[in-house]
Amino acid sequence: MKLAKPDLNHVPPSHHWEFKSFMPGARFIRIVDHEKSVDPSTGRPRYSPTDFNPTLVLDKPHVRGRFSARRHRDRSERYSYLYLGELVKDERLALLECIDVLSLGRTENDGYRLLDEASVQNLSFAYITLKRATTLLDISTEPFAGVFKANLDTLGGRNHRMTRRWARYFRKVAPHVDGLYYRPAKYGTDASGGNVVLFAEHEQNGDMIEAEHTTVKLTEKAGVARLVALGKDLRLAYTGGVA
Image 1 (spheres, rainbow, N blue to C red):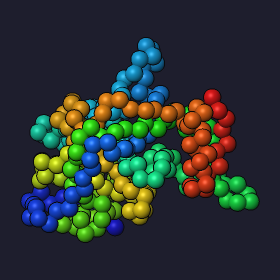
Image 2: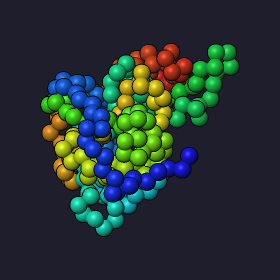
Image 3: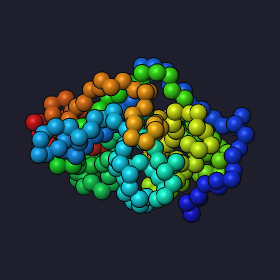
Image 4: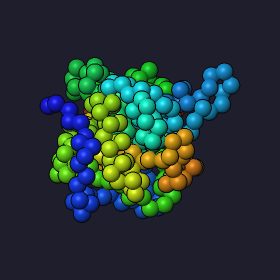
């Protein structure tokens, strides 16, 4: 399916929009690359898991990271944002965001995917809590997205340039919301929950989340325990050790 661009002249009536609300204390999760987040020359953190993405780059379809979505010239479209996974059942969703499960080898007998230590040695789970009530524009289903002439294939994250373009559009037509609630292509059904992207002014952090958070490295004892527990659900066999 051809990825649809937003129609910048199309602003549907607001009573056709859908919203997703979360109350203070709601829990979210994200995957953090703790090697990239630390300056190797000083050992000091470059950024926290709760820091919004501050860096300006040109949009590229297959590049993801700590980038502020924008077009090349228009300063008004620059903003910072933070991706969070909805903590519905467990951490499996956040793991799927960073691990290409289909590329992993299988065991001969039961067909479990083999996840080795090298695949997760730089990753941590970060558990984050909302500080205030948050209202998001819900584009997690075809009917909800269709109001804006969007489709889930476009919004699901397969082309990062296109999703950034849509994020700019949604932020423009709905400046009063705190961000977006959507379903990544890897998640499948709504039983798995969704993802959140929170908006903030460029080079600033939003006021929606608590600065304090809990981080668990996936190669440490607690992290390995989580991988083993997730293994049955995702049919993964973790083959690494414990740090």
